[in-house]
Image 1 (cartoon, rainbow, N blue to C red):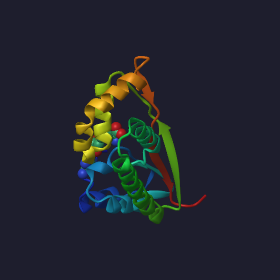
Image 2 (tube, rainbow, N blue to C red):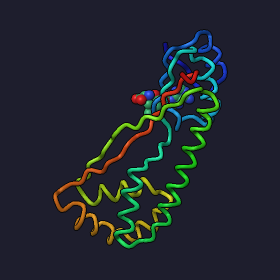
Image 3 (tube, rainbow, N blue to C red):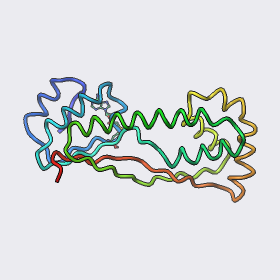
Image 4 (cartoon, rainbow, N blue to C red):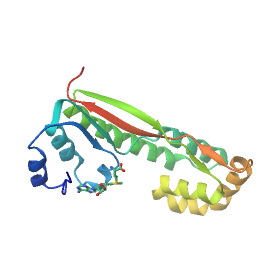
Length: 175
Ligand SMILES: C[S@@+](CC[C@H](N)C(=O)[O-])C[C@H]1O[C@@H](n2cnc3c(N)ncnc32)[C@H](O)[C@@H]1O
């Protein structure tokens, strides 16, 4: 079965004609405008003993630990990174609150997804992706940052950064 636009109530009216034992929404929520109404609709069509698996922002704790240490080691002002981490944590907390309002049991599952970087440019691109709001500050310090990458992280040719991705397994009842 192919579902239509999940942002339209008529799609859910058609989905809700039966209940589902397993609902998987991976890498979907960033495309939807209203995550709350999506989660409410899912809870409504999940069978009593069913399981709903979903991911969303993910606190990315390990990766933020990595970047914050490096920013400090380089001697740059780490406040922009701490602000970003706090914002992400708040988004995660809000999302977990929505899940807990609709499901009796919510299990957090961390899946390892390390990334290997071969060049200072690749590392710098990743840094910009993690902190897009601080692009100017990072670009202004690009030379010192990339020198640090070359001289400290890439001495052996490449570096693998430990990261994980957060998924939630949700059940209607607590047991
Ligand atoms: C990044 S893909 C993830 C696909 C798959 N879940 C996976 O993990 O590989 C995002 C999917 O969300 C779907 N999508 C985005 N907005 C949607 C909407 N409003 N209604 C239904 N599907 C939507 C897209 O068609 C696409 O298949």
